[in-house]
Length: 175
Image 1 (cartoon, rainbow, N blue to C red):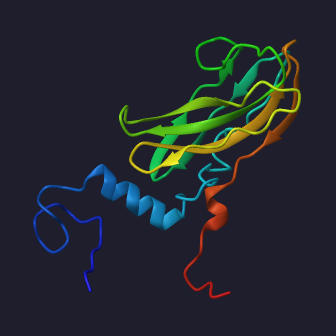
Image 2: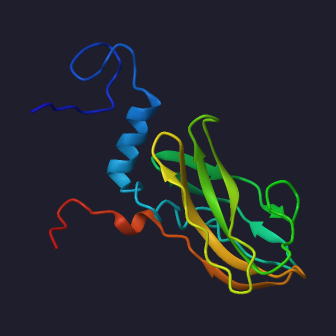
């Protein structure tokens, strides 16, 4: 059985490998410790303003400060961000009804985690767009979901955050 432990000083002694630890090794460690690898977990509720997405007025979507672990990678938003339809992040107002999801998107190529919108299809009765969760390519966790009409009216606003801490198992907890 292969065994490993980290972190150690990178001296070459024991598990303290001379080359240091890779980003993938750290991401794996965080996913294992926090179980943040599941589809919907990752937000660190209780940190700043909890990334609690809101609709303050009209068709504006607001993402406040907060932090998350997205598939093992730390993410922090230190400034409130407001998005309006067609701003380059938030898609333009649809020709019919559409459901959007606000997500945190981990992108391996860009080596970033960023706020993003996933758009459903325009329809009288639109459906919720799926998350993309492809290890090594793109991984998304949900923050919120809402429907927008062709007039830019927001309805059905739903908080979809799941606290990564809800999955923690503490030493001595055998239940």
